[in-house]
Amino acid sequence: MIPGLDRRRKFSDLSEQEILALAISSEEDDARIYRTYASKLRKEFPGSAAVFDEMAVEEDAHRNVLIDLHRKRFGDTIPFIRREHVSGYFARTPVWLVENLGLDRMREEALAMEHAAARFYEAAAGRASDAETRKLLGDLAAIEAGHESVAQNLSGTHLDQETRESESRAAHRQFVLTWVQPGLAGLMDGSVSTLAPIFAAAFATGDTWSTFLIGIAASVGAGISMGFAEAASDDGRISGRGSPVKRGLASGVMTTIGGLGHALPYLIPDFWTATTIAFIVVLFELWAIVWIQSRFMETPFFRATLQVVLGGTLVLAAGILIGSG
Image (cartoon, rainbow, N blue to C red; front, side, top):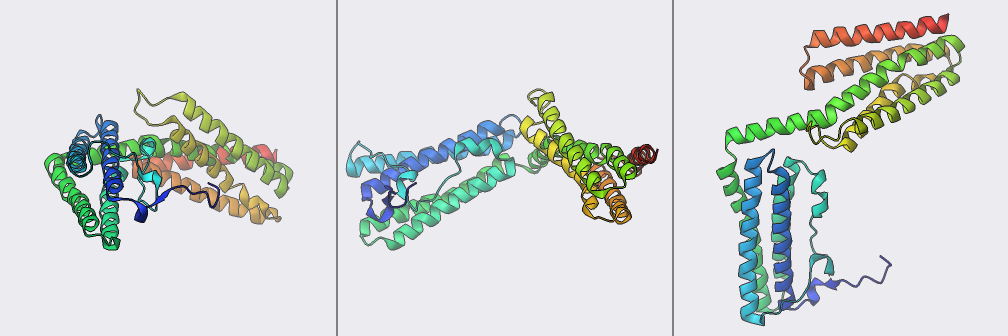
């Protein structure tokens, strides 16, 4: 927006009718957001979806009360005014961003919505000089503050301990499938598969700068390849593994990081210093892979250690032997 051309109205310049119209449109927006949350959660988290459904119903009821008040005071024609028309008015997360929100974030956003609305109306009521306007804003603040207790009551009705535990397990499983699993596969590929070319280049040339360039090329190339392969292999609709973009990003980034870890030490000019540090980094990378497998994939620690260390050692040895030959 060009400075000086902000055509939004100041809240202090709104009439009582416009304030009431703004409240009506805000209630409509909130109900729409809650219904969108419910729609996104219905399949995997039916209990939480029921909470948001009933919160939307509550918003509809409040909107109807506000419409009746407007009709009584100002008639049937409600001015068209929305949040984006008023400078300084509290914002809501756009509905189109819901795709990027997890269950816990949706709950946090809903609570923030109610808190923000209540604070806004309370502050506005404190600044109002007209008695009727002050009362109107105070009533709106009370309505919004009441929504929090409604949400808590609804959560108690629909989200018993068993439901909460079930939804938490489902959310954890989704996190593992969408982020951890492809990220782990990328880290393993980047850390292990680049060992051979990097250390082969190091021992073949003895030149740290050339080794660094080869390591960077191998790491970035492997990251791009793994990222696109993961994203293209499964759209997530049937497998339930989540967004292919998120999985591709996790796999690509972790693949690149895995390779860069033991490529960056070759920025050091001294060959043996760089190689020693690279060996140490490899040990940390392999330990990280073992920890992630044990922590998130429930792989027994000793089995994960045997698999990763044995595989990494074989690839590392192959690279050194090839480079030394």
